[in-house]
Image (cartoon, rainbow, N blue to C red; front, side, top):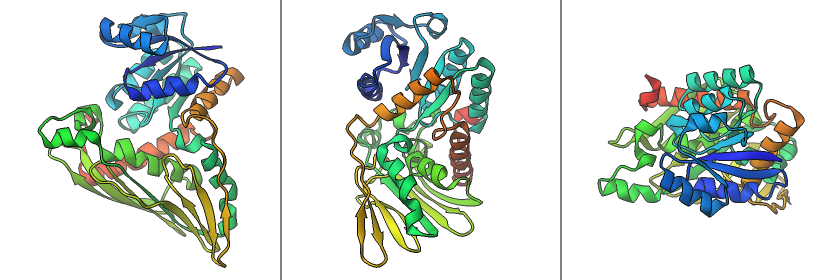
Length: 327
């Protein structure tokens, strides 16, 4: 059994625990929160026996093998490095860090301490993304990758009323590109690697984060176009266009229907049945890495995380998105 602790008491942590409990070797032993009251309340809700309000104490505990981090983005690096320095394996919610400098430091800590560090990007480990990888050769020479993820944030209503919640606060390294755009970029990097150059646009909000944006990425013999938003909705699918056909993906962040439409009119449904919670697959991957003594995932690898973070950083530089963590 791999004994887990969690950082973060929000809905995403609850969802992760629910999903991870479907993995036979997962056991939740502890939760961390800054306040005793919140820690106890959350531990009761999710069935954890231990609570911590000190990260140092939690890092030293023998009751924990691995930690799932779902704190605000700006805390990821500091928390992960502290835990890894105490020999804990770390599964860190996306985006894994605020910038490439933080991520480099995290990777160095993982290597130094001989532990697993993995970005909790669920998309690339889902059965339907595996189907895309296995079948992409069928559409011939790929000429365009198009991904759209635009989801109106419930917190934007509060923002318009004058309340700036974490989601729209640059102090927490947030915004549309970090929180939503990454779902378009990470799968692209896993499929096609690093682009030659990028051109980014963002719509900035007065708080100092981007509300929405788009990036065009040049791969030489193909291009990629990604669109993302936290202030509008979009209902269009994502698509990989090849010379012989196109792969249509219903939702790039959590694909549930994937089909190939060939130029000659044939349609091939390559959808895989997904019997588990979408976050089950990342938990399973992470646990298996620990058990097999591997130090990183082949799919959610350090290289893929660094490449994605580098693209995000370039886009932020081009559009003037600056976080306190960058200074």
